[in-house]
Amino acid sequence: MSYVITLLAATFLMGSGFVAGKILITEGFPPMMLVGWRFLVAALATLPLVAICEQRVTTALVPAHLRLRDAALIVVIGLFQTAGVMCLLFYAMRFVSASIAAILLFTNPIWVALLGRLFLGESLHRARIIALTLGIAGVALAIGFAPQAQSTGREIVGELAGLASAVCWAAATILNKRADLRMCTWALNFWQMLTGSCVVLAIAYSSGQHWPASTTPQQWGWFFYLSIPASTGSFGLWFVALSKGSATRTSSYLFLAPLFAAVSSLCVLHTDLSWLQALGGVLVGLALWLVHGKPTPVHAGT
Image: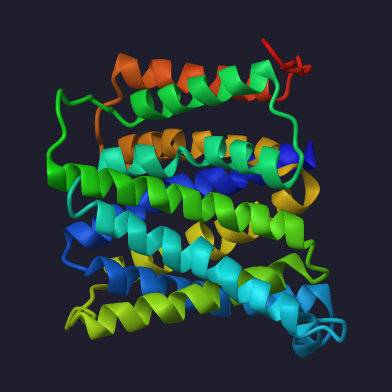
């Protein structure tokens, strides 16, 4: 039960973060600059939680048994999880709508399932395949996807970047499970967010982006919500859940994030919730039920 509650909290915070980010970007905050500072603040906000792991923060951040190989893997996870995902996602949104980019990002569970089958030996039974398909369809309906008849060359570039962002997230998930790093979950979260944020900020400043000259108290409020609950909280809880369950099972809950984003948008931005979006929520729920149901193995030749 604690595993499910952890994932529900993580995906709710992820979903609500889309609303906070949308508000700030609409009000003129440069996307890459916003992402970089968001995760830098989020990393620093993780330090009190790191202290819970051990009395000395330095011991938790750099445990005695940490090898150079482990440190390199942590950096790679950060480059995939924060820098790769966010940079590719915002690059995709230069060519396709935010809704389509979100759909592509949250195809993550299917890539985790495929990579988990290849690198972790996790089962990919019939019910799970059906569940992943239903989950993607549910995500598409929940965020109001309307398929276009034909994609232009620029849109194809955006779509490929969006898929690449999902694959980056899946790769970070598989690396984390395969590496089996023996360190505090919150310490791992600190390092991956710090590494990713530094890379994103370097890209933002080198491309000429700057923080807005004036920021209202309300904007600061949304920024700190985006940085701490929606980043420190969501990513930390995500890694906690990932340490308890399989990569495929844990990632299946990511289908809930855009559903929570739609509900948060309805409450905060007063957007409409159509019957198609409601149907998407039902499909997401069905997908999760199938993922956690009794497996029916897929045999060779079937």
